[in-house]
Length: 114
Image 1 (tube, rainbow, N blue to C red):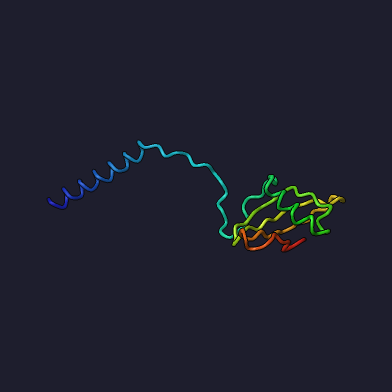
Image 2: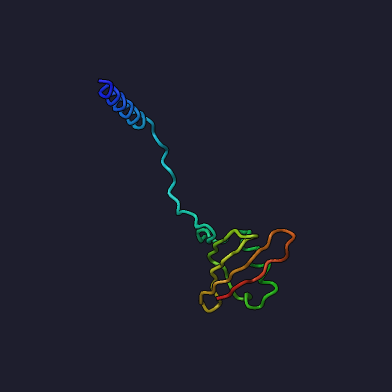
C-alpha cells in the first residue's frame, strides 16, 4: 500500500512539474552563429576603427598602397588580430592579417598577406 501511495505521489509531482513548464513562456532566443573559441568572429563590413587600423599600417607598407578593404573579421588574442579581405586595383582579392597589440605593447604589424 505504501508503494502505491508513493508511486501515485511521484506521478502527481511529475505531472505538476510538466504542467508548470508548459504555462511559462520561454523567450525566443536570437539565433546567432556560435562563437568559435580562438577563431575569427563573423566577417562584416569594416567600420571606422577597422579602417583606421588598416590605414595606420598601410602608410608604412607599400604592399598595401592600392588595396581597398571590403570585409573584415577580428579575433581577440593578447591584443587583436584583424583579417581584411581587400581588392587591389585589378580587382584581385588579397587577404591581409594585421596584429594590434595591447596598449603600450607596440605598434600594429602585418602578420600575413595572401
